[in-house]
Each structure stands twice: as C-alpha cells, then as structure tokens.
Amino acid sequence: MARLVPGQGRIAFVTKQMGVPVEGTFQRFDAQIAFDPKKPEGGSVALQIDVGSATLGLPQSDAELPKPAWFDAARFPKASFQSNAIKATGGGHFEVMGKLTIKGTAQNVTVPVDIAQSGGQSVATGTLTLQRLAFKVGDGEWTDTSMVGDDVQVQFKLVLTGLGPL
Image (cartoon, rainbow, N blue to C red):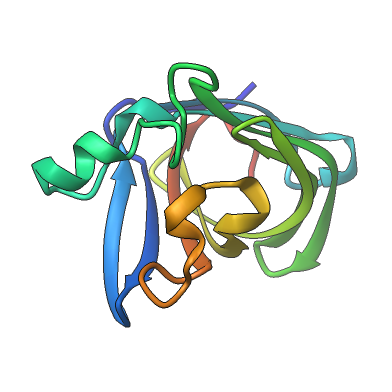
C-alpha cells in the first residue's frame, strides 16, 4: 500500500474569470493507493478532497467557495475519486479510469497519470479538464460562463512512498 508523503503533494484547479486564468488549490486531501506499476490492472486508487479547504488566495473569493452555489461544503464536505480500472500506456504513463464525485454528482473520467521515481519516492502527476457545470459547481447566477469559464483544469502532484518499481 503506497502512502502520501504529508505536505509534499498538491491539487490545484485553474479556471478563467472574465477570460483571465485564476489558480486555486485544495489544502487538504487524502488517498488510498494499492497499486503495482508492473501489474496496474489489479490496482486501485481512492482520493478524497476536503472541498472546504479550497482557496484562491483571496479572502473574498475564499469565503464564497464553500457556499451552496459553489462547493456546498456543509452538505458535500468531500469530493472523491474511486478508480475502477488502471491501464499502463508505457514509459511510466498510466490511464486511471473511475468515478469522480463532486457535490453529489458522479461522472466517469479518465485521468492520465505520469509516475517518476527517485530516492525511494514516487511522484504521480497529471492534468484533467472538467466542466464545472456538469457538477453544479458555480450554480445559480454563476452558470454564466462569460464570468467564470465552464472548463476547469485540475492539476495534481502526489508524492508517495511504498510504491513498487516501474
């Protein structure tokens, strides 16, 4: 079982506000990873993100993110990903298929993951583009995509110990 190295990973999200890219991060998340890079099809990845930890680094915006129109953190405190298939695509590259649930809405997604290893640690990185409105993030008056774009790029870097060699 691989473990996250505390304080080393990062999950960021990039959206466009009035055409300008804005980056935020989730400060708290956890993962359970049972995965052998040499036999990926038998592996599993589960990720939980504390949506109340979302920050854009601006107090006014940060106060809005947990509210019902955005992440509704009181009703849906966690976003989650649960894999249902993992496929090696060669050279430390993998496709992790699974169910992403945000704000009570689940969608099947395919997450491209690159793994690099050195010094007993593995670093898993990837980028995935989601449509926020498919998950009702930015509801009500915020469904106007000229203010906040629909596409959200999710970027992650997870630093792990205990993963087998590539």
